[in-house]
Length: 352
Ligand SMILES: NC(=O)c1ccc[n+]([C@@H]2O[C@H](COP(=O)([O-])OP(=O)(O)OC[C@H]3O[C@@H](n4cnc5c(N)ncnc54)[C@H](O)[C@@H]3O)[C@@H](O)[C@H]2O)c1
Ligand SMILES: [Zn+2]
Ligand SMILES: [Zn+2]
Image 1 (tube, rainbow, N blue to C red):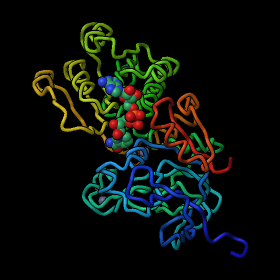
Image 2: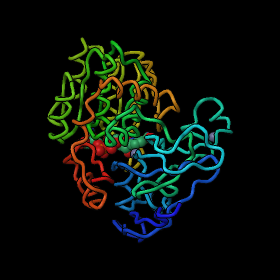
Image 3: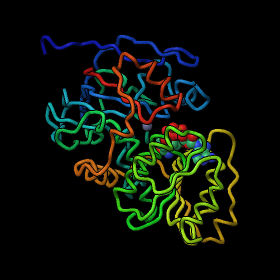
Image 4: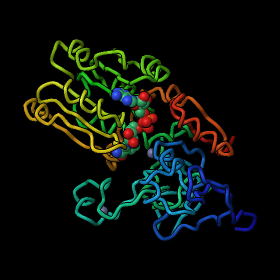
C-alpha cells in the first residue's frame, strides 16, 4: 500500500444552514467484509442534493451533519473487502444507492428497493461527492464496457424513469410524461427507445426542457398555456393514454394525469409532493378503473438489466439530457445550476 494516499478531500455537509458544505479532509474509507472501495469517476447532481442544499425539513431529519453526500455515481474498484469475489480491482461500476438488508420479507419477495431496514447511500451515510467511497459489493453494478462515466453515473435517475415507465405498458402504448426534469426527460427518451407508439411530454413553464423533450423524440409537447387534459384526450382518439407517468411533484399534474389516462390504464407516480397532501380525484381513479402506483428507486435488478440493454445498444441519447459537465471542484456551482432548472442533468467529473 506504500505510495497510496490515505486521506482525501470531500464535499461535506457541515453547517446547519442552507448551503453549508465545505471541502473537508477525511480518511479514505476501508472496505469492510462484503464491501468494495471505489475510486470515483463521476457523480451527478440529483434533486435530492438540491433538497439537502436547501436544507429543508426532510434533509434536517435525514442527513446527519458531517455527511459526505452524493449518490448518483460511478467509478473504478480500488479495493476489495473480505470475501468479495464478484469484483476485481479496476472493474468499472455504477452504484445502486438503496442499501438493503437482503433478509427482510420485502427483500425476500424481490422488493429490496423498499427494504424494511434500508438506507440510502450518500443521504443517511457517506456518499460520492468524494474521490473514494465504500459500498456493499452487491450495490456496485458492472457497467457496459467503455461506457462514458457521465452515462454510467446517471443510471440512478435513468433507472427511476424506467422503473416508473415499466409500471405500465410501454411497447406499442401511448405514454404521457408529466414533468420534464432530468428524470422526465430520460423517460421521454426511454419510452421512445422501448417502442412507445406515442409520447406526450408535459411541463409547466420550462421552455428549455420542453425543447429538449422535442429533440428526444416526444410526439407532442404541452405546457402551461395548454389545456393538458383536453389535448391528451385529443391526441389519443378521446380515450386518454395507456400509461401516465408523473415526475413533476405538482398536484395539478397529478390530477391531470389521472384525468387523461384511459379506462383501465396505468398512472405511475415517482414524484415527491413538497407542500401538503395533493388532492386526488379518487372517483376518477375508481370509475376509470385505474391502476395507481407509487414508484420508489429501481427494481433490483430488472431495472438495471433494462438500462444495461438500452445503454449497450446506444438506444438512448444520454448526452442530450446531460447538458453540463463540470469538475468536482465546481460542486457549489453545479448544485446551483441544477437548482436554476436551466439545464438537464449536471455531472461532476473527477478526472477533469
Ligand atoms: N420516488 C423516488 O424514488 C424518487 C427518486 C428521485 C426523484 N423523485 C422525485 O421525482 C420528481 C422528478 O425529479 P426531477 O429531479 O426530474 O424533477 P425536477 O424538479 O427537476 O423537475 C420537475 C419539472 O416539473 C415541471 N412542472 C412543474 N409543474 C408542472 C405541472 N403542473 N405539469 C407538468 N410539469 C410541471 C417543472 O417545470 C420541472 O421542469 C421529483 O418530484 C423528485 O422529488 C422521486
Ligand atoms: Zn438521485
Ligand atoms: Zn430488507
